[in-house]
Length: 162
Image (cartoon, rainbow, N blue to C red; front, side, top):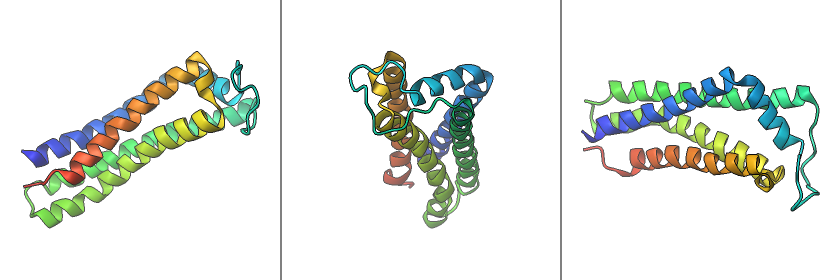
């Protein structure tokens, strides 16, 4: 039963990544606007000066949007592949099942890099997005998007399989 829960948690992380990527794709103009708002340091009143560059080039903003979406898709597909590996190893011995976790954990790590690295480190710290309502809400949501894969990863690695 524990192995089945681990497989389902892995699938949930994969689905989360792929669904958010899909949402960004079907709302591409809005995603561009949100990223442009953050990269452009718009409405920064608390800390009006930043060590991060102000990026107003639409082309560079599009690069940022596509990097985010590509990372979400990659994290989702890698975690999905890891879920398949876990499913195939569900009846195997503990060593084989643990070995099958590697790809899932790589996918979870990529998910953490998206929502911690991109949103919190680059968006939050470098571009100070916490200063605006839109940016603050994005950071708050990104925290949850970091926490859920992290908890799934901890469950996968810390709860005994047998």
